[in-house]
Image (cartoon, rainbow, N blue to C red):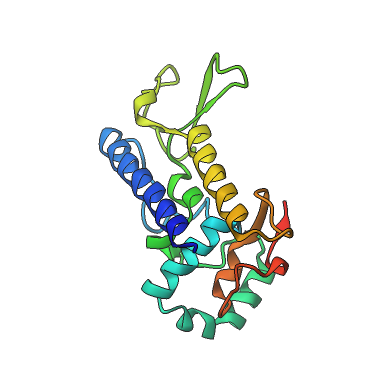
Amino acid sequence: MIEKYLSAYKKICDNIDLKISKILSFYKNDILCAKGCSSCCMEITLLPVEFFSIKYEFDKRYSLKNLSNNYDIFTSRNESNKKECIFLKNSICMIYESRPVICRTQGLPLLYYSDLLENYTISFCEKNFTLRNDDFELDTEFTIDLDRLNSSLYRLNKEFTEEINNSAFTANKRISISLLVSGNIDYTDPSLYFKE
């Protein structure tokens, strides 16, 4: 039932990754995001469609059983530093290949339009573009349109939650990323969700 949504989510990630490779190629001397940089890695929440898509990838790719065996370690570490992502180990993401959309895009040039779509803002990690002058302008072609991306994710999630057809679910509920280390998870269980 949910496979079509998992496939659609993977396509979104694949498209983002393609766009990111173009951005990194275009700004190869300006973007310093790399393995070992974890300043933006924090505990986050995910839309249900993203959570279950990542969970599905875990089961295939990472042997979640090994991660689940360390649940107590993850939990105690997370309680001591609630801001740090539970999957960060020695400043390296343990789930990099299956990381969420926000983790894929964080730090890169992100394009936001004003409410009236008259103008835009581009934000990026302060560690990037440090060699550029203040009057330097980023090329909008080599940015990630975050409004468009979020709209795509929201629409997919809305369809997913409607397909589940459970009154406890709505498109604006989110799940903590740390629950990915739990064992078998039933996507129809409303106790997983909380409203942000």
